[in-house]
Length: 302
Image (cartoon, rainbow, N blue to C red; front, side, top):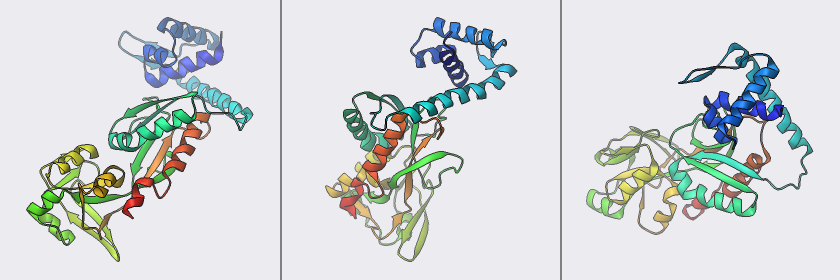
């Protein structure tokens, strides 16, 4: 029996809660995965899963074995990384997730450049506007934009996310240009479910203004708000990585340019420092170098 492969099957099944899903992730048949699992149980002398027609769950022996099996896989990764030639090119597949707006506006081009630079790599992207469970979704790297990263997460800062208040010239002509934050109370403010749903914090020289806002459109995705803004529906707080070209081209105008929403960080979040394949480390380095603390999309606006 290939015990390392059997351990990989066991860990995959435990993480995914499905023998079929584990087999697909490891590019093997369900029958083969089941055979590896049976051989592992024979080797350990104990059943590691309770199996029913509807679900699969760990036995007490399986719970005890899982941490040790993860350790074995981590040790193998550490050994491979320690013996790798520093000049080795990354290879294999990386599965990443990020928001739809950042994925469409920035990550798609970054991924295309990365796989062109390293022909032995492949990237599987999951665009979703919620924080996913990296283990359950089998994600190698999550790109998260936040002002307060959970201290329990393992993450690397990649860049900064700045935002602006913006609207179309047509909307501002019809409804007036706000001259001070309090003027926003008389405007249709389009809001994001998770960032400034009812209160916008605007940083100015000498302090911060917190302004209660409301409007008739709210969404959980910045791209939706952008399209509503472009349809002259109101004022929205939108990230510069998404709207910079439209501001430069004159389609959108910055509202209250002396008052900026608080900046957030763009982070790469992963599951373990010890078990980091070369492709994950390489991709993090690539993104940090590409974006940086003064990202290209911000330069024309500053």
